[in-house]
Length: 109
Image 1 (cartoon, rainbow, N blue to C red):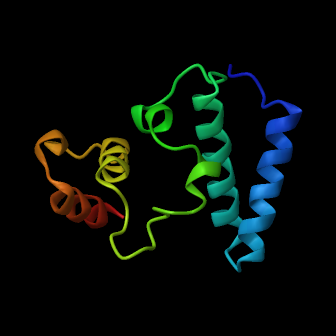
Image 2 (cartoon, one colour):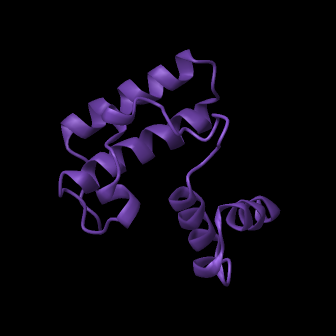
C-alpha cells in the first residue's frame, strides 16, 4: 500500500486545490489538478515509488506556472498526449505523431 503524503504535500494539495477553485473550476477538476501537481512534485523529488518519464524529466509544476496547461493555442504536448493514450490503452501510439495522438485520445474521451 502506498505511503500517505507528508504534511507538506497535504498543504501543497490544499493550496493548489483552493487556487484552482478560485479560478472558477469545479471541485472535481480542482482535486484532479492538485493531485497531479503533488504527484509530479513527489516524483521529481524522489518521493514516489513509480514515476513517468514526463514527470521526472519535465519542468516542475512551480517552474511551469501553468504554461502547457492544455488550454493554450497548441494544446497538450506530445508527451502529455502519449501518456493519456497509454492510460487509455491506445494501440500503435508509439508510432503516432502529435495530431494522431490528439485524435486518438479525443475519440476515447
